[in-house]
Amino acid sequence: MMELLEEVGENIVAVVLFLLSVGSVFIEVSKIKLNPWTALFKWIGNALNKELKDELKEVKSELSETKSFVKELEKLTDLNEIKRIRAEIFSFADSCRLDVKHTKENFLHIIDIHDDYEKLLEKHNMENGRMTSEFNYIKDVYRVCMERDSFI
Image 1 (cartoon, rainbow, N blue to C red):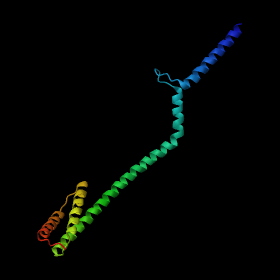
Image 2 (image 1 turned 90 degrees about the horizontal axis):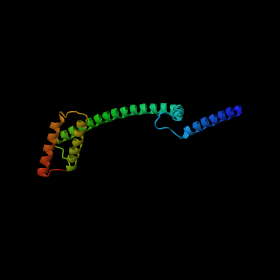
Image 3 (image 1 turned 60 degrees about the vertical axis):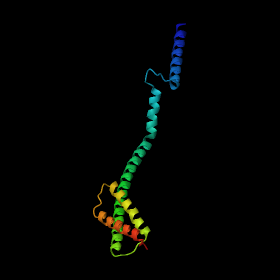
Image 4 (image 1 turned 45 degrees about the horizontal axis):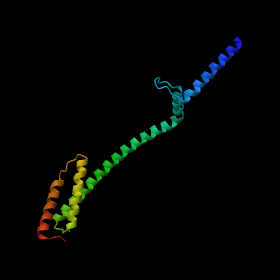
């Protein structure tokens, strides 16, 4: 009889342990912040996704390099545009000095691109320099053309 009780007792312990282990899959005790299944699944997930995480880090690094390159390219493009606008305004001022007649639209175009020029200078914390006197001359010629209606 004792053997039978011992055997039944062992079976009961085995059943209780089995139920606890199966129940721990579905029940997480909130007061105790220890759940071996969560830790195990997290470890498995990290192991499975390690390659993906490494690739993601590489992509982030390449994206950062690309952003830096684009910013530098944008700066170079802006500096080239500043030079182009400056050359166009200087050329226009020279043609005005040579008494070449222009349309009102030509003057308005120069005024517009001068505004763009000022915005680019401000964006890159640059100063205007010689352009101010040239643009003032163009504005004076424009004012005279407006008063006399002497556009082409």
